[in-house]
Length: 632
Image (cartoon, rainbow, N blue to C red; front, side, top):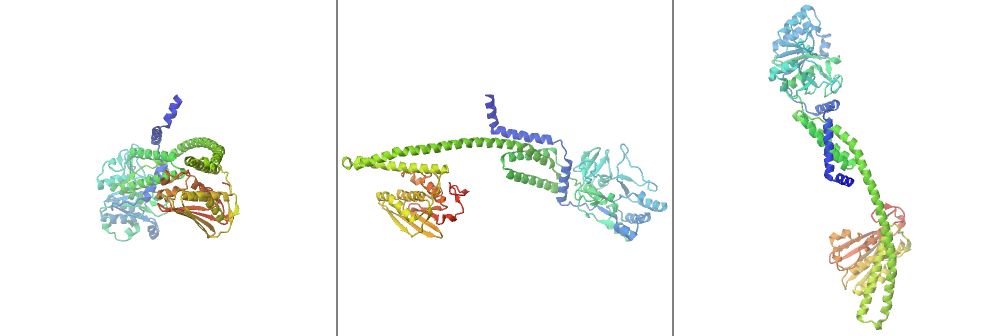
């Protein structure tokens, strides 16, 4: 009893839906704590590459020591060179001058270095150190003399070498460390007024710091002054007045001067100077990408997991993979649009991993179900085959056993009918009815036997060279008495035809069915035309009547097994097998049978038979499947 209840419960469709929902929920909850940094970082880089570049603030100008400077000076810039350049910058009145080159490493005499220090002190100058203070210490160590009075601010790079994606790509910018602003947010505060690190969009906690993601722009976005040009030529003050000047190296000689970015992971992809410009502009415009809330990640993971489960369980593998591919493509396209136009980062790793997990667990479950269904279908098919065999045997047995008593009935009726002098009109009519019914039943039994032979694949073509016209004349002669009962005239128009290989008995059945149907469904005092001709290697036989016709909606079904047109079901005897067998026997000869009909005007059946059957490449079963040989 409990087993039956369990089976019934498991077969309930709502239980299946509930289990799928529960499984999708379980996968979503189990995946939530995991951080797929590599996959998510790859997706972030992909979105950065495909998104249009955001606008720049116009507040950042680069002063670059590049290869042309060293080539023209034939050396690295020295203290006097720096002094001249900084003096020109001072006259242009920039808002800030930030050097990412340590002044202590500049070559020159102590006096020249002292002069450089004095000029730098008159500027809003700061050295951006690629480091952060030690834990518990608020400041970095001062520079060596004579630069000990110049301010030093932490401006570290954040390449993911040992954390997160671990691929060496610089994606992050540190805003605060131990609750103290670093260089970039300190400068940006003077322009945007943001004094709280969490006032920046997309700010997040990482270790002991507050960070944001850098929104990169294409290389070469920022206006760049070459060091040697400023040294040797007058400086256009308007180009840098009130702006932030960043000084750094871009000589393409030292890998330490470059960073890998989401837009390019080449060794010299982007100078560290431009990286700082992008980081500063991200803060100036408050454009840092922001991560969508956790509930968004949960929602998309759950939806895609649930869709995957339903697709895997209900859709064919090829279509299922295509459907999942389209779903994931649409999802990725949606996340790209949200990043490009809204600055939102929607996690894609959890839904992608969920798809693979679902495939890993659900595909075996589907295989088990399909194997069980296959076994059930196999068992049902075996049972149906046994039933079909029993049915065929029963039909053969009954048909053969019925023929004997029918022959006796027909014979006795004929014997009694010969006693004309002893029968009145009523008795004679009764005998005619008995004889006619016996003939109809005999024809029906013959049709059932033919159908049984077809279904059991026992029918073979018995090919002999015969004249189609002669076969038709014999059929017309045998059916002439039926036509005379209704005063129907059978007109023949037969062109001379060569004899060719055919099965005479099967074609007699075909032509008998067509002519008897024409007689049966034609009114009295009408004509039936039987014609033959040869056209392009085919013998074409047509039987046209002036009967009631076939409705248009029934024309496509007249050759179906046991099918009868609606206008012939009530008042005309028939079993719906004649035309089915006719089509089968014609197609067995590699021929075709067609019908044209106009309601209340008549029907025309056309049989087309190849006159050289030996040239046929194959024969076809009635259902259209190809097979070789002559066996049905």
